[in-house]
Length: 176
Image 1 (cartoon, rainbow, N blue to C red):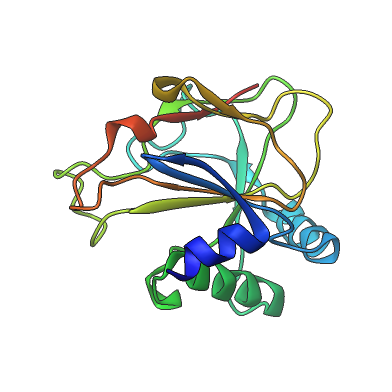
Image 2: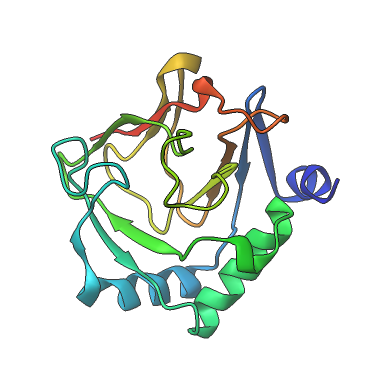
């Protein structure tokens, strides 16, 4: 498996079930700076697919244009490491958290009744674009696991079991 070999060379397997991986130096400092610069004028209050803007999520998000060469390169890398065609990936988003902002525990997979999206989110791919002084962790409450953000590192985890069913253990949150 390409991902297994890549993790050995580039990252760390944090959990085998559900699969949670860290890929170090997934983006360069220059790419991170470019992505942050591109997103900055476009930030708006983050919403959730299920409820729009609500008190469950207080961050700000910006969708990044896939025609940008840096965005395109990052999407190609994500495609390679996850084994899905680039065309199957959702648009990249930059998410900015100020001190005290959060995203309460949630799943990234879709329930059967959420038919607005074809297919399901089988994995989540988070890229930390910068270091932070405090907070910013991604916590998995059902696994008693917390990942601290490290600049340029990708956190990749499966939302679904190998049979395609949702994996409840993928419950996660962005910690203030």
